[in-house]
Length: 194
Length: 327
Figure 1 (cartoon, each protein chain N blue to C red):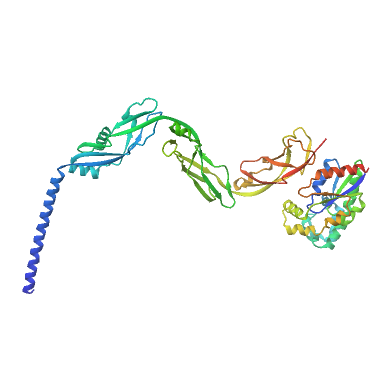
Figure 2: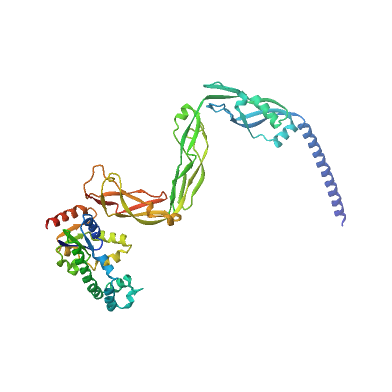
């Protein structure tokens, strides 16, 4: 069984691509969703309390908005947070992969697989790319945020050109691109590699 | 008082006395002259504007007879004075059926002796003296076979709205149809009626007004009714959005299919008064299979196939989706 990474910048459409893979019965692990679930895990909460203090908690649970504000534009704090969350997410992915070992391959969907270097531990990497302007528009409409806020979030991610070099497959998701034929093509190639 | 002043005063009194006597005599003679004059007979012309009613059923009047009847009456000055200033002699409605009797089918002419009408007016309005003559002597009426039909009334209304205001419903005209009467030739040429042109700018309130229906054949046809009600409900709107699942439409009924994305965002305008009543269940977004049966992966348009009539759809995001037909 192959462990395949699925990544892409904010607003690139990787979740939509993941949905297409799911419809082909491919197990998809969403690192972002699982990472949020981890914030409720007692051992993770303890580590975060030690690192950032009690003020990030509200009613006994981690307040995600306080935590997001705390690490926003503070690379050192973000590194500390990732050091707690990422290993736990990876452990969960390993369990997920084991659980779905009968499938030809499983997908690990995450926004910063290349930036963290985790892609090296995966068998293949699929990158979803789209024009920056289109990505900004999509996120503005999806999250009801300003252009400046989206651009600020995009700055924390690598350029697509840099990530393409590390990728095995690239899915283009611009206005005129069709996703389904590209996914079907990759699906076919991945199945053929077994 | 000096002698001169006494003489002057005496002359003035004399002068005033003589003047008063002269004026009294003048008035008495004028009164006598007027009494003699008013007791004499005179002939005067009294005009009456006439309108025709009671056109026989199934007939239409196709000519335009005289519209003023001039009645020359001979009477004493007193009676004429009284008639002139105390009696009304404005307009008079001539009931055509009363004066011409039955008219046979088909095209026909008829005349009305205006002396008879004048005598009727004389009795009704208590005209003095005797009628010497009436001008015109007769009213010539030309009839044609009358037909009728119902035609739609088209409102000629243009309007613009103030910011955030829109029509809550379509423009309503009541009645929607009018009956037109006239000759076959005239009626055949009329297919609809238009109202007077109305223009409303920067509307922020509903329109509810009466408007005249224009007669396209001058007065050659009769329109019933002559006016119509026009109403347009105007409400303040706000923009809102809702996420709706994409459903299978025409061509996909027997197919297992998955759309990407599965949900779309519908941005719409809604009247403020209805805002709290909106439920996502009120929207149905569907995707139809094109007639040529597109292969997997082709992008298909999302249609908002059902929504409340008070909602104005702005756009759907994304406006098209991809799909996979599942085995």
